[in-house]
Image 1: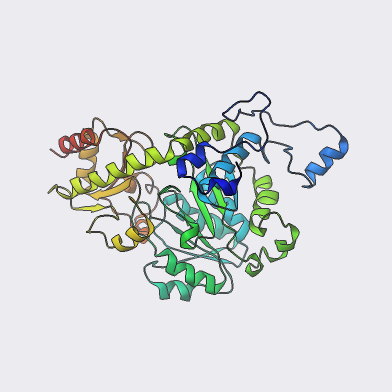
Image 2: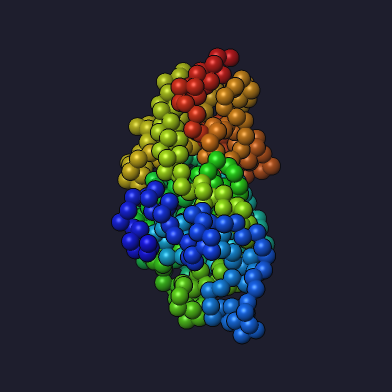
Length: 417
């Protein structure tokens, strides 16, 4: 089955029917786990050619591995991306991407409403290498346009901000970034490929934490970088010189695969890749159930007098409902937020839960709840929390695959304080 043939089939069929790059010696129908570090060659010339990128053979599992390659192929089929690179975590996918794009004197235009570690990477880690971060209100297109200049290496945002539940108007932002000659990079972890098409809405580079939906129930930690082949890298100050280096992949992915990933070493483990390839087979089923339950729970919470506000972009109360309906044909993911009266009420509510688990992470098979202000953002100063828009009376709920009626009952009894 060729990649082009797969695109005419439905999502689950394409994933489950994905073929190995090479036929397995024993006819296994699931990709074997290649735990080895090195690969033997029949001659000195063959191994030299492999190390000089003249063949696509595997040389060392820090660089590439057959089991990881199989997962990358499945993600390519699922997304329609031109190239995919699997790495060790979602944060590795972000950091590797900006190691490839950013340089001293460059700037990144983004929202201050980001996941805590992403904010920290931009604001603190990259700053020490001379990279500026320019925070803008992504609802204000004029502000975005004004912030981009000749040294902007990328515009970055989250598909739905975590935990703010805001949506940037990607089609309109894509028109700006295209005109300005900068890549549009989006972290789409909140909604997987069966619920959102990054390429359709103008995304050039997609970043995913595969720890979430893809892993099949929080089995493993991983990340992925997807290049849709839609950006002209001759417009990138850093990558323009790499455009002519290779014709089989973009300058961006050439930089990632041939330099950054090799030198940084944030490779995905083969056992992780095996678990996540298996997780992809049930991705659509789990997403449909989890996101439908999330919508039901958002409606349910909206009717409780102790709940001051609910964040879920499909709700009529969300200021992002119009763009949410445009981007997401079904439900906008399995994460929602809600505010109680005080931080103390949040703690009381969490401590009374019996079915829902007090834990970080998103899109486990189990429903998880966390108080972001005291955990994910707990080490930031009050001033930085204000910049990031983090409220101390907000709870984040990641909805799992339990029966939604049991989740409703747990929430109701926990609110009875």
